[in-house]
Length: 205
Image (cartoon, rainbow, N blue to C red; front, side, top):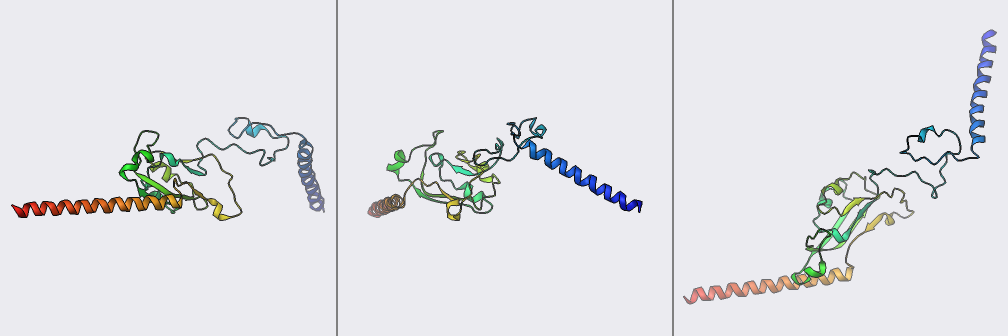
C-alpha cells in the first residue's frame, strides 16, 4: 500500500516539475532570448526568453569557413575543366570553344593577368546534386570557383537549382564555333599548299 501512494507522489512531483518548466518558458516568451550569435561565448547562457527565429527576417549567421552554395566568377574562369574532372558526383558541366587568334583581345584576361583561351558557353552547376565537398574549389587554378555563405536556396522547381554561368548565348556560341571551324579549315588549306610547294621545289631539284 505504501508503494502505491509513493508512486502517486512521484508521479505528481514529476508532472508538477515538468509543468513548472513549461510555464516558466511560457511566461518568459514575452521577451527575446538575446542577440548573441552562435559564435558568441554567451550564446548558451541565454536560457530565458523567446528563442524561435523569425525566419527569414532573422537567421543564424553562417560560419566564416562554412561551405554552402557554389558560385563561379566566369570573368576569371579559363575553361581548364579541372573542376569538372574533380567533381565526384558530376554536378558541374562545361562546354568550351577555343578562341581564335583575332579574338584573344576580346576574350580578355583574368584578374591576375592570365590570357583566356576559351569561350565558355556552358558552365552549369546543379546545386541539388552538390554535396559541398569543396574539391572543385581546391583544384581551381584561378580561384574563380568559390563557396558562398548563402545556405538557404530552396526552390519549388528542381530546374531552378541548376545555375548557369556561361559567358556566351547559344547564337554567340554557334558563331564562335563556325568562326573557329573556318579558321582551322583555312589553316589546314594553307598548310597543305605549303606542303605542296615544298614537294614541288624538292621535285624540281
